[in-house]
Image 1 (cartoon, each protein chain N blue to C red):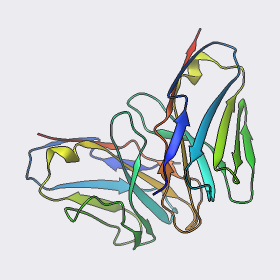
Image 2 (image 1 turned 60 degrees about the horizontal axis):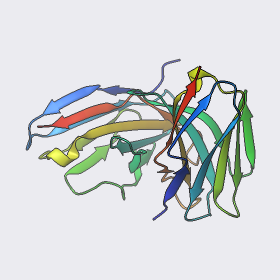
Image 3 (image 1 turned 45 degrees about the vertical axis):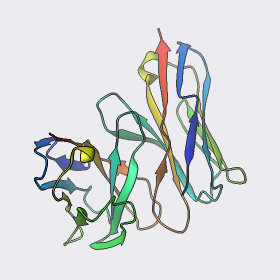
Length: 112
Length: 114
């Protein structure tokens, strides 16, 4: 069974810092990968999707990359803001099915 | 447009009762997924549908859990003879295509079994 690890589990940074969140899969055969944001008591909001033919995606201050050879993904957040405070989840799946495996998340706090 | 909706948002039931959780996907989305999320964990896959066909139910914990999507739109996840360990957030997601398009999540149903 695919296991997904997210490091760090929690992160606290001052406003304005750039930061990197990490995600790794035990089975590196990741077909697609999606990063989500989850606010306390809320649903999941999709941030970025890296499809099978892609290596990275960018949206505003966010950049996600996927190294398929190692099964590792990073989410880069530039110039962090207090509004970025949330839990960030990565999820990916193989090309043998639509089952999506989630990590346990990184809880980010951006201090004003 | 409207996103994925789920009802009820909160459900409290007594052990041994059956519950039915509903998911209404984004209009036109052909794939629908059910997940369960425990506190402090990421969502755990339960099952998914392409149109009305259940493609994978390997994540359903046991035979008390079942799901259907008879007309390829709204889906119902049913838990029979609920147990306290079934208490969790149940999340539904939908995607446009049948193979690996972006998944959009609903707000979830918080199930508490007393």
